[in-house]
Every structure is written in structure tokens, then in C-alpha cells.
Image (cartoon, rainbow over all chains, first blue to last red; front, side, top):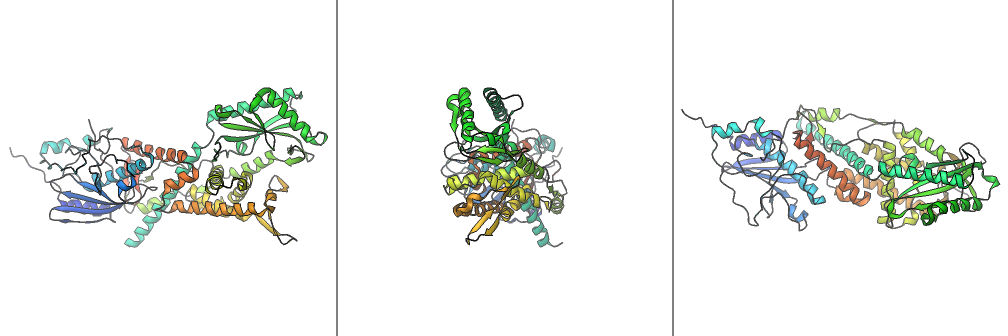
Length: 175
Length: 401
């Protein structure tokens, strides 16, 4: 029996969906790297953040907050739920685990909305010192973390990621 | 429809969402600055006890002693004061003896009330120009100011209060009736339907904004409370001129007049819009007459006692100048809140109090997270995170365990 390997979404398809859903953003694919830039205002009373999403086929996507620099806004406090300490800050939107991200998922559906949510919670944290976004996060090393190589998908893991499965009540949010 | 039009309409919808969300934050904040129901019960119990004690001690026949709240307690516009010394609530109650004032010496009556209050409340009783303050210290975070009163020669519900030397007419029940008559006229708020139709060019789902805001439940009361709170901030913190503070009755009267003329004149898109209109218009109701001395005379009739000019004190023009300076600052503050690049939380915290604003935003954040837990959170690019089943971009939350 030959297992049919489902085709991951290409970076061009990801880009097309980003452009369709967030018409004010801009981006492109160059040398197998997708770079997408957009302004995110998480909600009506929030500030607007200039963000950059980077994604290569092998890695987990990374959403950076480029401007304003969040570490400066934190005024010496350690930002919670981040993957980097250096600017630009890479938001920790989910645990780097294929259960949370795999390359049949749409950046436009998963990563960008999670960035809205993360930024809303980050802005709240900057003001209140309380992270209300839930989630857990491993201890972040001071040095930039090397992202793990994205594992190959198999049909069994794809099937385990049905919509019903991912829509289970969660206690965790952005990691 | 070309792209430019779509973007413009989307921007308008986003601005509307901001003004409605602002309304919600102000509503949350003001609610946290009111008396709690427990405090309200405690206040009511205190002044009823006080009234019963005074009636008994003064040997009044039944129904000849009457105690009732006046001012903000009566109008529903109580708000925690923002001042340096204490932030205890000021609650005014009138203790009225139903007998003509003309036959009684003001000082004798006032002192008798003070003496009897001390019998019951001892050291909690402190003198005020208008009567006596019951100050229970930190045990209860409110002052009850007891205003001794008798009946005015005008009759009806007009009372005579005293500054220890003279009797002066006052008509708190008439004022409350006037205020309540206008406050019960509710504004018509335009539905979000129009904005939603605009957004539906991107998204066919029903859109509900975050925060899970509410409109002003009691618009005139809310508008008055927000204005008073900003007034306190301006005179006590910003300019540090508490002696020049514009009295609440002046602010309340001006706002009520502005509200009465504005509330039915338009359909408003948000409570904030109505607040802004009332704030902008309020100073129009001050009448300025140039007297024979070639000086400006500021006039605002007390609506329940037209012979009384609420701005009599403004013959010292410093009070008038202070009011106009506050008014300008207040309107500018409200306008700045609309600007998307404004440091919103800092501005609101400074003017309305950090605790109230932190609480209001925490409530917003909590409702956002609750929505996420219930899988009701989604993103509409033009307005950000939105709550509502069936929105076009559901968040598939990562989960653990």
C-alpha cells in the first residue's frame, strides 16, 4: 500500500491567502522564504504594531513585532511569552510542536490571528504587569534559540489534526 | 465601489468601533467609582438612623422631621472624589424640620442639630459651613454631610438652609425633579448595522466589537460623573488650584441643559459621541451680561429656584477663568481619546484614576480571553479581535493536554 503524502501548502499559496485576508499587508517569497509585513491593531483601543512574519518551508513561522520595539516599552521588565530577547521580538504564539503548527495550516488563519491576540495581551501586560493570555512557556535562553527543523508530515498526523481536534477547549493560549 | 471607497468606509467603521469601545471603558471605569450596593446600604442606614435620632432628640412630633439625600446621592451622580487628602465619598443629606424657618434663629437651630448629633456620634461630628459632617474615618469611606433645614417662606418643598447667620432658600427636591425629568429621556443610538454592512464587504458574518462593551446605562448621570471626575483631576492634580474648583451643581446644570437640547436632536453612534456633544455645548448655557460697571456678569439660573444665580461667585473672575480653562482642557481630553495614536491608557489613568482604568481594561482583557475560551474570538482585519459566532476568521487555538 502506497501512502499518499498530502502536499503541504506552498509559500505562494500562503502568501495568496495572506494577501486576500489582510489586503493592507505586503509581502513576497524570495529564495524559499516568505516575508509578510502588516500593521496589526489588536482591537479598537489598542495601538498599532508594525509586524513581520517570516516563514520558510522547514521552520516554524516567526512573527516579529518590528515597531514599536516592545523591549523598550517594557522598561526593563522581561517580556513574557517571547522566543527572543533581542529586537525585533519574536512572539511566542504556540509551542513549537507540530500539534500546533504544521504546513497544511494557513498562516492567515492561525498565525496572524494569534498575533492579534498576543499583541492585545502584551499591551495589557505592558500596562498592568499581568499576562491574561494564559499559556505556558519554557524558560527562554538569553541567546536566540535555534529553531528545530520542521518534521515531515505523515498522513496520520494530518488526520489527527482535524478541526474538531484542534477546537477542543483549551486552557493554554499562546505559549 | 472602488478600493479607495472600501478603505475609507472601513476606516470609518474602525473609528466608530473605537468610540464605542471607549464608551464601554468609560462605563466600566465609572461603575467602579460609584458606591457599591453595600456602601449605599450603609449610607442609607446611617442617615435614616441619624434622622430618627435628631427627630427624637429635638422632640419633634411624627412627620415633622424629614431626612433625605440631596445632590449627587439623590441624582445618581455620586463619584469617588479625586483629591489629595482623602478619596472618601461626600454624601449630602438634608435634615429638615417641617416648620417655618422665619421664627427660628439660624444659629440656634444649627447648633441644636450639632449638639444632638454629638450625643450619638461624638467625635465623628465636625462643623461645616453648611452644617455638620459625620466622619467615621477609614471605618467607612464616606462622609455624611448633614444639612440642617427648615421651611422657606416660599412654601412647597422649598427649604431654608443656614450658614449660621442667615437663612437661604434651597430646593433640592425641585432640582432633582428637573434633573430626573431630563435624564429619563434616553438617546437613540444608531445601530452598528451600517458599520457592519460596510465591513461585510470583507466578511459576511455578524461582527461584534471588543471590548464586550455596554453603552452608558444612565447617559446623563454617566456624562455628569465623567465630567466631575475630570474636573477633580484638573483642579486637584493638574493645576493644583482646588479653591477654584467649579462646583458640581454648576457642572450638572450646564450638562443637563446641553443634554436636554442634544439628546433628541440626533441619532448618536456611541455614548462617547453624546458625551462629547454635551461637553462641547455646556458652556453655551452660561449667560454673560455686561453690567453698568462695564464688567461681565455670569448668570446661570438655578432651574429650581430661578432667582438664584449659581454663578454669583464668578463676580470674582478667577472662578470664571478657571471654569473656562477646565472646560477647554476637558473637551481637548475627550477629543484626544479618539486619536488612534494617543497614549490612551495613560491619559485615562491620569485623568480618571489608575485603579479605575486598570480595572476597566482588565475587564476588557478578561472578556477577550473568555471569548477565546469559548471559541468565539476571531479577527476582522479592519477592527481587530472580534467576538461572535460565525465570524469569518476563527482562531484555531493551540491547546495543551
